[in-house]
Image (cartoon, rainbow, N blue to C red; front, side, top):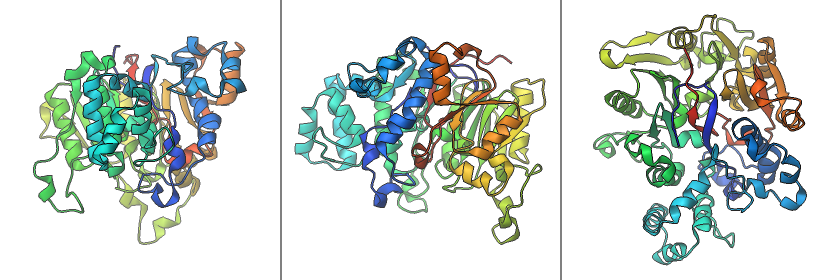
Length: 476
């Protein structure tokens, strides 16, 4: 398989996803925040009423032969969602919309990999030797489910689930023809990172790219440095990495990505000549923001969706009372520093996010139109903050001007309409694709709205729930 991503908006051709698994339905309130969820979710609604629409939209755009003309059969009650279940013989098994659980199952067919990975999982989860032996006698498909959901076939939980596995963006990021693997900040993501490493280094899908997989080393003697538990660790997650052009990558410093993680990533990307320019966007280490892709993503060459309170606020439509008390909003403005490979000692700075994004649109992407911004909640308090919390800024571009987001962010939807976008519910679009009224190739300037009552509780949008492997090169 060819792997290449050199923009956020080139036509999407292949990506990694993970459909919600049974582990999401076992998150308990007392552990939700430890496992990085804000709330517990209703698994059946998340699957059949919400995420399944996302999968259908992806297939219609990326792999239509898998779904076009088959929708009635796929969704018939007697099929019991077989099309959506990775371990089912009737699973879609797309080579364009690639299920991570299937890749894990594939590598577990190798006895040596199976033994090593089982031993590694059992070590980090503190399992007994007897349990390890029991797992080794489990079939590859069942073992993959155990590693992800934490539950045996009898529904007995033997270790915690990894509910964040649905956020495939965070396990790694494709930068041109390289793959940068993450180093998570939170213990809850340790197992998913281990699984991802084994997949990328051992699956045949990535065999031609193994020398192009980048792992970030730990800072030497980090455990002696100040800080709780492990000191100043080197951490980086994919939600803090954006490939905005062939030569330019953005890296956020956030709650999840440390300064040393960003520094090591830039160093390795420069040493390997993967990019020539890297911009660090330092945002407050707050749960509200989490990653840079929760506060801005790209919509078109000259258009971005953005949380206004961390921007210039020059176009603010509402007054936030927090500006008038001790915790001023301007404390949340990012620090933005840009490095060039051949001039590393002379960094460039930007005064606000809008200026950086305008520079990307005009200079990196050679836009011949003014740069425009769509603000979360239409930049009206309190809707801006409310809708950013439910991922109004975390959109996935199927291609330039065609983006997927949640249906609950009403004021942000209004802002899209004001910019001339068509807005359509996923269910309506699927019906129009199926009856031939619309063709995926003809869709442009469209915001596709996904049902989101339960899925949004996980605090991640569709940018988070995707790891693009192949996009068409974006012409400048």
